[in-house]
Amino acid sequence: MIRLRDIPNMLTIMRLLLVFPLVFLLWQEMYGWALAVFFIAGLSDGLDGFLAKRYEWTSVFGAVADPIADKLLMVCSYFVLCWQLQLPWWLFVIILLRDLVIVGGSMFYHHLFGLREVLPTYLGKTNTFLQILLVLIVMFGLAFQMDLAVFIEWMIYLVMATTIASGIQYSSIWGWKAIAHVRNDEDKNKDQEQ
Image (cartoon, rainbow, N blue to C red):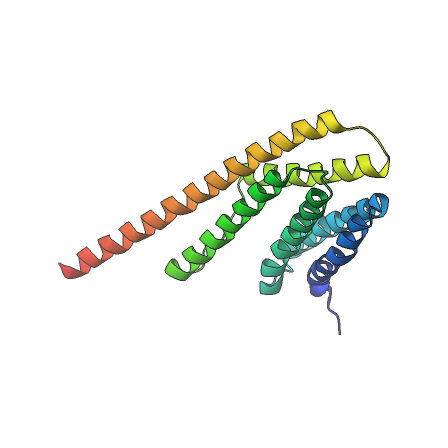
């Protein structure tokens, strides 16, 4: 039986499943439909986040699957748009490397020191917003045959800058946390030895 508190997880699962039609529609250059699917995915992301926070319908599954769904939608969208030469490959590589560094770093940190909540920074949220906005603008221009090349070029460099900056920010935050954790452990060991 479905409980109300399962709605955020169901929305997350729906968003994971929307990756397949989104990639298909982009691949087939059906940009209007792809734009609609991307928009629905975005609405479901906002709704599941609101419900989870507002009613405390959080779960371990949601905490893990929600960011995976978001990243899959973004990475797949960027990959197909780069494949079609609508966006430059170097931007896809920068976005992918940043995500791999953050995910790899958080897994390494978790392995060494245990689970720590990863809170998004203002810069990280701004970067995510700009990445989504760029995909929406590209798909919108393609769907409605509008020449947005100049605007898209500015957006590409803005996304590049915030992607690099937020990657450095997250790396430095977690790097300093790791150093502080090691120093704290060393201080505890010294106290126990005395």
